[in-house]
Image (cartoon, rainbow, N blue to C red):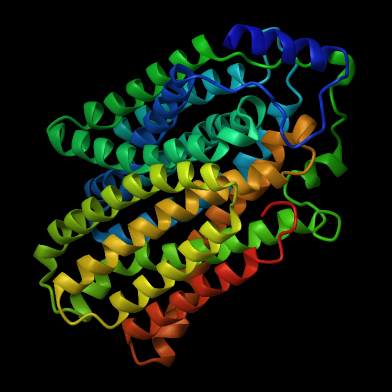
Length: 431
């Protein structure tokens, strides 16, 4: 069945007849394809997320123990900017690829191979500049793969299945985070293995998707033009022309502003708000991450399928954002670690529900889906990445004005996430 879909889609593009209706593609995908697609996402997160959580910190402490905090900020910050640039850029090039192997396959393979190379540079670095180079290469490579993976949802999955498949994709993130972190802990005696085992798993899962993917092929005559206007368009869509996409982007940006605060300041919150000793913070963060990730996995699958079943997206997205805001308030005013864990569990449930329904919603209202799916999804991904640089720049001012009160910081984060629920309401293209 998958091969039939590929042939029909290929002929449609080659003849300039790609349908423009929101239900394209019309044929349902099977569970084999969905499973392999989810595995590719999981492999990517296994390789990309643990370095952010653990690996870069360990390497920086080895290479520059006297300036570890500043060096880590430099490496992580520049890497976030590279990711901000790379995802839309490679997404646009994926939409223009006329290879006989398809539009997405070359980027899946190149991204996975580049990720292995980048993580190898990190593992063997003997200086912070070399570490920075490796992390930038890793971010570029995996964002190229991520752009292709995101476009496959629009290419291959009909509207009636997008919530379910988005739920599977949502599960892949916590699975990848837990699996990759476990590998790093298990292989801590070998720096090379600590980084490269997960990279090889990511490569293997990408190769499996390349093997089964019924990729679209773009005729050279239909290749979109690319100049300075198109380059700038890789980072911008006119909100007046595409208001539904703009509102969905704003909602995701506001949600991730709250997520960025929680991820960045969780350790300081535990020490200053709950009085945890510094030596106990890593164990407590691991436990809270495990609790949150399990909730994300469960509710991502449930939320996506439920959204498909009732044929609605907005109520799930807005409701989940309000629940996440409530969870941040629970965390802000927690007086015990048990209450903190409860708040983290609720953030996981809300995040899983939100991401499953929101990714399906965005795919439903994605502008120019037949010709610019990967590029426009890359623009949407900016809403995920930008808060990771913006909120750490704003948070010190909030802490200064509140006298170092982390509860006040989390209340501000909750307010931003509540605005995320409001921002999804004006979307008109889906229910």
